[in-house]
Amino acid sequence: MLAAGCGSRRQEPYLTYFSPEHALTLRYPSSWKAEQAQQDGVWYRYFLAPPAGTERKPAVSVTLIAGPLGASLDQYAQTYLAGNVVQSSRDETRPGARGKFYLFASPDGKMRQSLLLLEESAAARVGLPPTPPPRPTPIPTPAAPSSAPGAWVYGLYAQGEATAFESQLPMVEEMARSLALERPALYPEERNQALAFSLRVPPSWRSTRTFSGGGTFVKQYTSPAFGAEKQQTVHASLTLTVEPAPGDGGAEAYQKATMDKLGEAFVVLTHAPWRDGYVDVLHSETPVAVSRSRRYYRTAAGRGYSLALEARDDIYPRVWHWCDMIAATLEVGPEVSGP
Figure 1 (tube, rainbow, N blue to C red):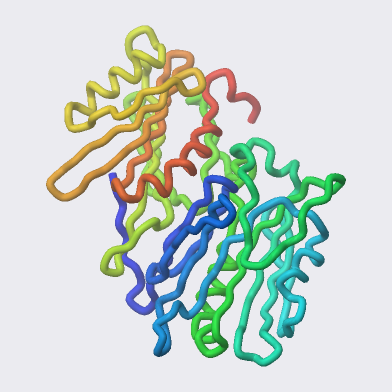
Figure 2 (figure 1 turned 90 degrees about the horizontal axis):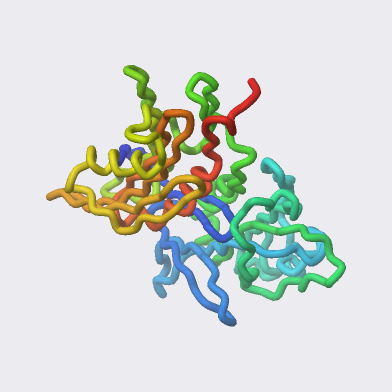
């Protein structure tokens, strides 16, 4: 069910944060704290390095930027850069987005900062969850004029006292490099014409097991790390199963047969319609772990297709929205055509 991998003994493990509002991921050091705060009724996300110095304040804070872009990217950047000394800049690209990364300092050199900004067109956001209110940033940013194109800006703003910032700069750089726009249409496609299914899975989810035999096909993926304990990383798993559909071949019979096989150890917390099938949330408990799973069911042409997310109970809230996005790409039966 759960996969735990050893973190490097020479370097602390990095964890993954997924933003369900904007379909973004980034990696951050496991010793850092991921926090959220409210400003003017809007929530925003930031990350804090371990305390440093005599005052024991976080050495560096990194704030996630996401919202409509109401000006050019260069103009947007000036709301952070103005009055500071830019030390370096470089172009940045991601699938479907491009932008810049800046390192800069206050005029007296006491504070150092970095800024990553990526611009994405509104068209690239088609199919994502409904747009939430824009997240605030530590300093005012341009308001979108009514005639502005529907571009969006994403990024990371980091700041800290110069000495502390320098010590954390490799981590800040790694966080910036890891920021990814999770767009299912751009994910690699797993397509199987013989079994009539296709699924798009993020590259960060590793394929760890494949089985085929007796009319059943199983493929398992392991998520990036979402937790860590004693230098071991904690992951979720996602399992695709294709098998003969029981009973009348419908999704209801398939869901019931699956639950019968799972047994009483799995308790259904919710059962709801999903596309032309169902999605269940399940709870299970053993002497060593409490787990939660999310199962998606579809059927077509005599076959049952299921996706099963399994995660430790504390990891599940961090990952299930992402799995909903992945599950939405599952096509079965007559939906699968072409080479």
